[in-house]
Amino acid sequence: MSSIKLFKKEINNSIGSFIEEVYDWELNHPDADLKLTEKLIEKAIFLFDELIQKINATKRKGGKKRYKSHRENLSKSIDILQKELSKLG
Image (cartoon, rainbow, N blue to C red; front, top):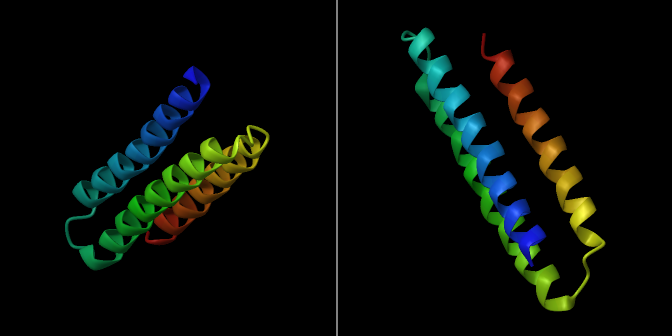
């Protein structure tokens, strides 16, 4: 169970770090349209909720091998969000 707990912390830390990057970007670009960054934050929060739900469902089914795919999904999704942030300018 502790590995599940650590994985949930990893998800929280990864998404939290991304949201902090978005806030830093907003501070460095005060004239930018904040609606675009708000959408990125919403996507990150949706990703968090989705992954936690999947982990809880996996935990009930007893499929620990699925955690690898969830971890890959987290990594790919964070990369996509960071690319979207970098495209903002």
